[in-house]
Length: 239
Image 1 (cartoon, helix red, strand yellow):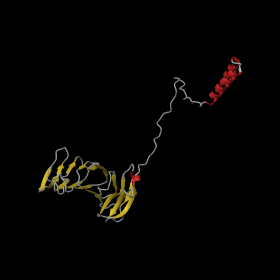
Image 2: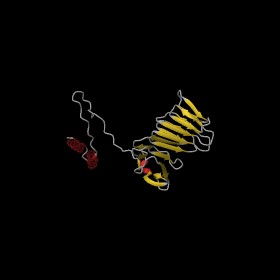
Image 3: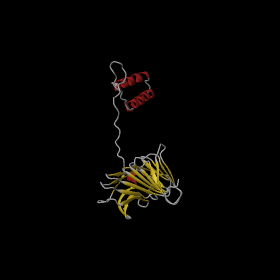
Image 4: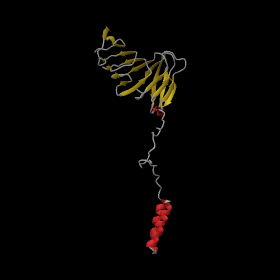
């Protein structure tokens, strides 16, 4: 129907412009109209005359979070495993007695962090803070699992993360947390906690412990050692 109207307009234009130049102008204009992309209009509501738009939402693209998957050695019980990072190999590593037992490329942790498959035993994981960049860490498995962090830095504990110096580690899957300072004067702060127990060992400096900003119970057991709210045990804390 549209093409017929265009052709009719071409003929009318040719009659009005019988010269050769006028015919060429009309013909070129007609060809441009034919080659232009056609725009499909939305169907109209018979009652209102307004365009009817499709209902619902376009489905979102499903994207899987990439994670660096590591595996604890089979048969492991309470022996401590170290999570480290190799810059030369660009990979996350699990080490048992200094021997690499599991690896995953750094690129695989781009969105899901490091994911470690544990077992039903009480697993113990230590972070190699000196080599390990800030990354989310998840331990899968049952048991009363322990996370150990030792570094000569200030440390802050939240329910879902631990901040060590300038590095933030989102943490999931651990029931026990152990923090150890170094020779400097370190400041330990527990803002919120989802751990069943926390142990804080100050180290050699004049260390400070700050509890949650709520009514708390402090029990001094011996010099520079005691309990905070029953679940947080501390030692070598001078302030």
